[in-house]
Image (cartoon, rainbow, N blue to C red; front, side):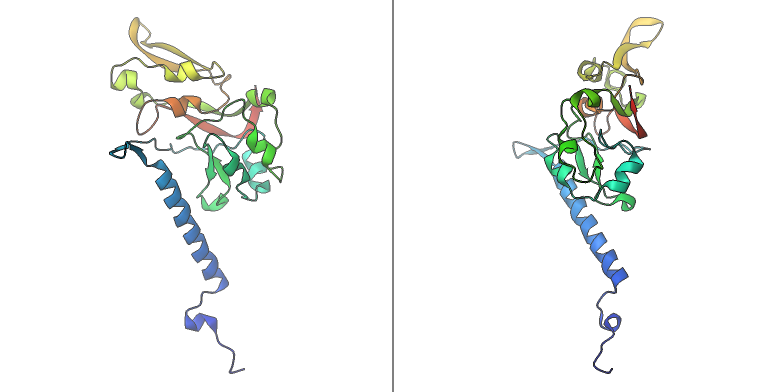
Length: 223
């Protein structure tokens, strides 16, 4: 029929092109929003240097999600948990393999053991309901110390923020030189006790990268 027009010849995107365009637009919008959130202004005069998220080998998924596979298979990216997270830990992923599904990051907060908001609002079972007690014994990841970023060694100052604020008591401060008890104290992580909440990563004063960060677990563990 001569009245029919081939849309591809008049610049209208095909389904594949349209999907790619919408995906790119969504990624750009999400990236811009996240970048804007990272800008902190002190009295309107100076930009405060914010943390930069580490390159995690394994992403962190929320307590109650059981495993990365379970979470990916059941999450519909509805953003309910993101909107309800009171600590700014959950945000949409820009990874194409799980685009817009929530991911956890600790630059602006950490996953407080007493908070179960995301498990209460998830409509699909991607994050199953979890009690505070069960959450406190669920290991979603473990802390990893980065020597080159640690301020007692780089700046010669006392710290211990990570150990003081660890709700699981998984971090202790030890002499950096075992032969000298007066040497700068550095953190030692007991992986068996760490729950991966991210308090250490969030409260670490090192900038722009924390001296301690959380690696996720593919399958959550009970400790």
